Image: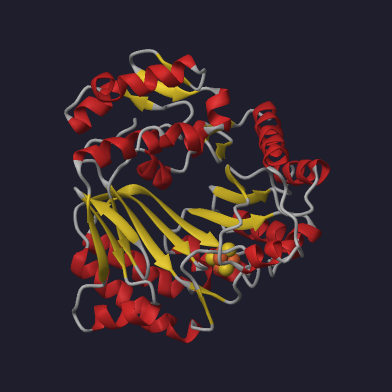
Length: 384
Ligand code: SF4
């Protein structure tokens, strides 16, 4: 229920900022050619978690970068540190982001044995042309094989990421991606995240667009692709529970990201990771070596701390909670969390958006309408 109360168990985010290759559209905090730092990085993660972790936790999420560059033994050390430092829910969701290439059956079996129970596989597309445009290093067959090996290892909760709106993508190519997702050997995944390609300034892809080497799809075409996905997955019985996220059954909603969307607290470890605990948001040093040296020397690895006023927190509750399409923001949960009635603080904005057909407001909760979902960024911005 959005928002979460202040005393809810936290989510734990662990950032692994290493990639063998940097994709041209990527603006995540990740580095190529620093893999030799991984053993030191794992040691520092263990030390930081054991020094600064604490309290109840319900989820662990290893994101990147490429967390699948870590061996099962390295993951075991990190997860053991989490279990030592936090009171971890015995049925905690433990997710790891994996790139489909370079993995074998022994790796999948190993990560399952150390407690990873959910894999998010960075598929992006099954289309060969799309994989090249996106600068990915794997082939569709690698993603399909990764799903099969994960299944064989007993991992029963898989999420696949797909990107739509890449230069040159057509409606038919997108429909083929969705069809492949739904008909994977061994069955469809339990969850998928569908991201509209954002060409971020400063990336090689933005440079290629500026030079006219690549042409991005226009907003209307990209919106059509999004609607096709909603229709296709809806017809297949999937739950569209968050703007970019779909679950095959309600029990497969991504629990870690729900902590974010419900404006819950999360601890964060690793270079460039940012967390929110209480009234503070903090961010760690971006560069792996800077972050490692801070931890090794006993200094704080945190580079920035932002104090979150009640106004900012209430705005963020709306901005994040409205992303949850079925759940929306609960008036009762809002009052419990913030000590102010939802209609007292945001009644004017909600009524204005309801009059425009962008939100539904029934006094118990406020949710995006279908039209509001298509214009979600504009709607959410009204609350900040
Ligand atoms: S694999 Fe992911 S994190 Fe690494 S460069 Fe590509 S998009 Fe970025």
